[in-house]
Length: 194
Image (cartoon, rainbow, N blue to C red):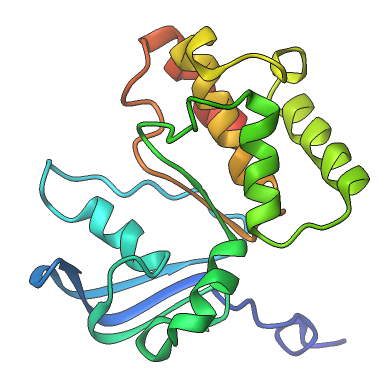
């Protein structure tokens, strides 16, 4: 009989913090954070306004520096991260912002194409296929030629989720993805993210 602990590969966390201080600007907002997020986990970070939830997210995408301790996201050590490595980290992380952050002067399709070009996609046919795939995944394929202002809040959020999926990220981070939506629309967002 085999020992299953030796045959199964050790799962590395996608996100790991040890004794990490999380900063907001120059101020420490969280002291000594210990956290692991493993592949397949669906994690909520909850707390009152101003307690550092968004600062954790900004640290995970290297927008904020790690104060002290150690942290890693998708194999990148945050406490040793060089500026030139930040774009490579961000390609492995899909982010859904609370305020959607869509470019209002471009169609849905052009918003998604902009992200692909910015992350190094050169093959136009491959980019078009990927845009079609992610729009289909979020039920918005028929909205590709619409401008963001022509979409409801829930539709804009679906486009933001589609954008986060473009580069097949190892990790998706959503900062209050239902905060700007009505209750009925908000109920479907966790299912969509799953």
